[in-house]
Image (cartoon, rainbow, N blue to C red; front, side, top):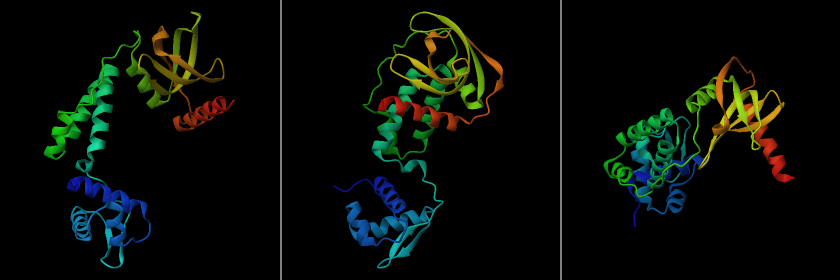
Length: 232
């Protein structure tokens, strides 16, 4: 059974991206499971859409950098993954993130071919109701602080034993789990990475200053500490 044209073109682009040197049409056709005639036709279609593919039959083809993949070139599996992920965010995220997820799905669907748009609308991959612990803080404030590298003052944070403390932290990641959300941050009090369940934070307010370390650097350091703990 021949794959839909959009999927064939996407697969061809992905194969070409893996090859830095010219690859023959015969090799491409064999890898993609298509005929040589179909391959030449698909290459011509991509070139007409702006893909900078150099080469010719009998010599080989190479994709030059810089070609942006149009949104409508998602495969069916990718569309299902996007729809499922966006619907999960719409159900489990804070109100601002949920609205953004719904808007993003509508924007993606608007540029899809009709048959794939129908797949989004009639997707059978469903998301169950969220049953997370109740929260008294605005998760959108945490997300904004992460983006802006803003130090936060966590007020009356309760640990597992119910002991409350105030912390100034450098937030850099937010974990969404089935029942809870967890703020990952560098804690100035402990001078170490700490995980704070958002439903245990009594209140949160900006500390009026920003931390200088990049989020990427903090995330890398945190991942290294998690790997060390896993290896112990």
